[in-house]
Image (cartoon, rainbow, N blue to C red):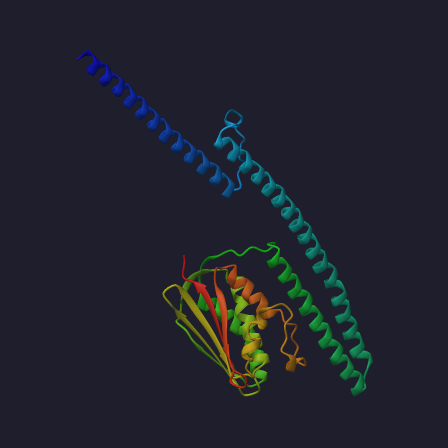
Amino acid sequence: MDRYIIVIVVLSVLLLFLGYKFWRQKKDIYDFSDRLEQNLDALLSDKEIVAEEDTKESLYGKINEKLTRVSHVWEVRREEDRRAKKSMKGLVSDISHQTKTPVANQRLYLEILRQEIDSPKGQEYLDKMEKQVDKLEFLFKNLVKMSRLENGVIRITKEKEDLIETLSHAVAQIVPVAAKKEIQLYVEADEKLFISHDKKWTEEAIFNVLDNAVKYTENSGNIKISVKRQEIFTKLSICDTGKGIAADRQAQIFTRFYREPEVHEKDDIGIGLYLTRQILELQNGYIEVHSEPDCGSEFHLYLPNEW
């Protein structure tokens, strides 16, 4: 009888010990998981991870030490990135400032020359010079915009705004040029359509596509603009009756400085569609094109319906 009691006691103690050990291991695992999660959250939030000396020899301590090193490396790289962006911001600002005066002076000299030169040939050369000055100014402005967007100097600020109003401002800029070529503009859209977007930069994106449509559509052509709210995105479509784009070139048109080989006489530097893509992507949107040679082009700009 005593032997059975001893066995039961021993088994009970053993079970209690195993139960305690299991509970302790479970607690250690939960503690390890919680502390690891806190460190990962700190890493994702760009917060400093503090090295814990008392756990240095444990598994958590070893992982903590490695995460601390990763955090330090990331911080060094972030600081280098901040310095590079600051330097780039200064460089872009300097370029923008330094180019304004020469361009303004060239315009002044051109105006003076116009008053001094009376011959038709002289006036023709002056017209050509003025076009080059306009092109140079346009190039500098767009290079500055591109640089600022790529280096995060300009930040997209999304607010609940009327997209139709943004579209109207972009269309208003293109109307005089379209009128000169007798291009008909058709707009199909609701009176108001509120979505979250950066009004200024979205107007720039729409204008760039409209500008291309007018440039590459022959006289007396048509450009149709429509806006449709879909389930996830709002789609803004711009369809023209221009020369169209070959399928093998459609991906290239959104790259920097790309120009169609057969239209080098056009006043274009190949930045507009690249900027449009960048602006839309910074707002979690995108752009796509459907086109065939001699059949016009359809550009679809998508902006998310998120608030």
